[in-house]
Image (cartoon, rainbow, N blue to C red):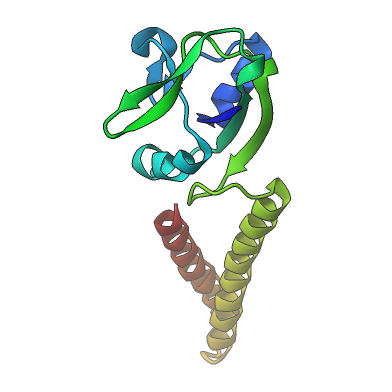
Length: 171
């Protein structure tokens, strides 16, 4: 059987280096909680929406093969449902798949996420260049020697400010 766990990419990298994953859930360790929280596949997106939606660092979805676990696990009641809990440190050898999570909690290919992010950034760069060129063109109409330079500088400042504001809102 497979169960799933949402982890930060940084914590998972530490687990790979140390040979042991001990984060129970966001902001809580195995020692504090007594177990590692996991989910069945249909519980992953609701768990992401409730506990991880505002996390800005990269997240990964760990697919855990319960037959490979070296620690006990069981489904425990939580409210009106049950959730899988691992009662000990997770060995990376029990993880059969690691997938990056997008900002909606879905799994996509790393290539697809990279291309999407790069397209977004290139769009911002092209927008700043367009505003800068427009500023230089308008600066030429003043007839001053420094007009095009000052116009381009103003365009860059305006475009950069807009790009910064948009990227902050997107994050």
